[in-house]
Image (cartoon, rainbow, N blue to C red):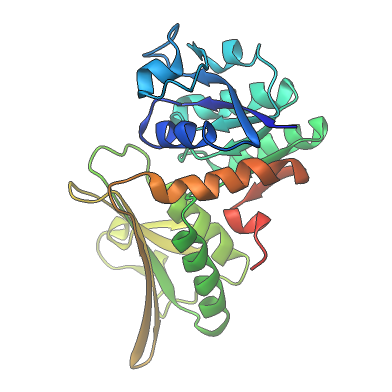
Length: 266
């Protein structure tokens, strides 16, 4: 039986590519979509995909009147948390692609998901190269005690750090805390010039035209350094395969899990 999916943000940059792909695979069925701008229309007409006969709703609450197995959150930080909690309350598992949620948000969502016996798979980035960056960085952190993260994104991205950088900092914090030669709180001059401290890691967010999403972590030792970097192109295609995998696997989880590697054998 096909997994019934609802996509919030179905006409956006990433959501539209994912929606088209869901419509082309036999084991998933797109039963509802959320887009305030296109509410009341048929998704296939908006995306130019006649096979997608999915109705578009104004809100997640309205869309969830159509029962679904998995709710995909691809909207904005100011609506993401409410959408996730509503979906869990309606009995759906949730895949989160929206960035900007805080650690406190995820803690609250985790408690509610466990109450509902449902899984939430939150991925700062669904690209396979990001999963590999995270894994390689975790290995490096076991051997190298100093690192910093640089988070690059397009000039109109309002949240900082990005979900990719947040997820990376979270994973590194579980390995160890960095050991800078001079602690950040002993900085002479402008403390904020050292970036934001996120779970022990210093994170520097750059927002400029010309970038889509890039993430870089630099490890340093005496007379040597290691740089691990991911760069996205202009297409949303790299995120689709990971998102499809997340949709297929999230029902095997209970509570909040961070990163696509949660369902990969790495």
